[in-house]
Image (tube, rainbow, N blue to C red; front, top):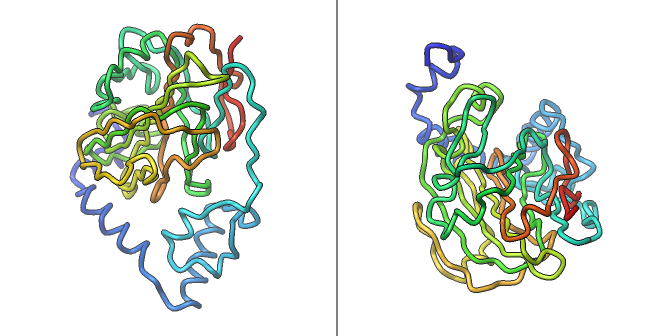
Length: 285
């Protein structure tokens, strides 16, 4: 920790979970319309939010949280055409890391490994991703914060892990060991069908400071309650690229894993940079 930035060292003493609860409460307050409009316009201007993409005019959002979890205007993110082994991007954001999963290990940043088994805690048979791929997708405050299904298939399991709430930014990913396996997260697992037969995809929604809400769509829970630290088997609910998967309440990072019997035949078509929902991230070579 001696080589950590001062800001990270100070965060060791900050009550991150309490702070996140307070931030969530404040973001959900319905303020008088004029004040709310001023607040939202200030937020959008500060972070560079593209208001033309929002489903509704900014004045119609009743809280900062409602605006942050806004939907896009209909038809704005069409899914790329499905081809053999196609996996489409689940989020708007930035692809900041990718690589192969070897000996149960993923790479957070140069010199900082973390554990596949811990990342997928409560998900059965994580070893099915051994030798597969990981893609790390970062969402900034300006981004659209809903998450969408990347694969054609059936959903097999979901989980939630109660962890810490370190920030997820460049400073943290390069200094805080095992950041993604330490932080609070939710995980969604699907098995490919049709064009994606032989592939397995997991999306781990990583929380952060003031980003405690990693919310899976209720469809995948089938009317059941998912505990704060536990998992549920899902009984082959069909899913298609673009379906609602979940959302972030104040954004963070999605680690997407690609495994299964045909993972060796799959390759990414993009190595870094800006990505959008529906854009193809990889296919069979």
